[in-house]
Length: 83
Image (cartoon, rainbow, N blue to C red; front, side, top):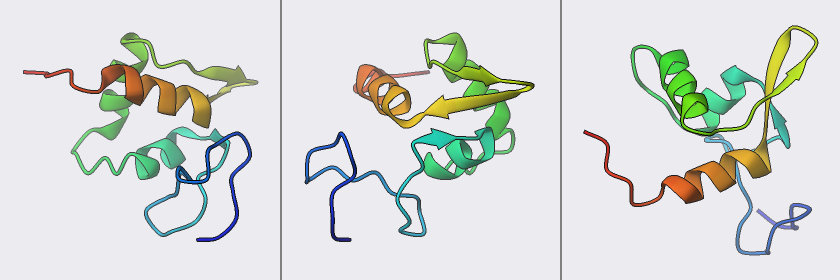
């Protein structure tokens, strides 16, 4: 990919599995795709992430996830072992 995503260093361009740039504001379905959650109950995984500090924004009746919040959460969880 060429170009630079706003707010990110040139070496870090968050992309979806199919190569598209990750949206700045994600639905739960887009977050599941972005994280490549191939588990039986991906919504439970997202709920657990929210319980552990992943920020979400309520827009009307819908929950949205901001890409910088998702990346910050993943960075904070790096190296954490879950058993």
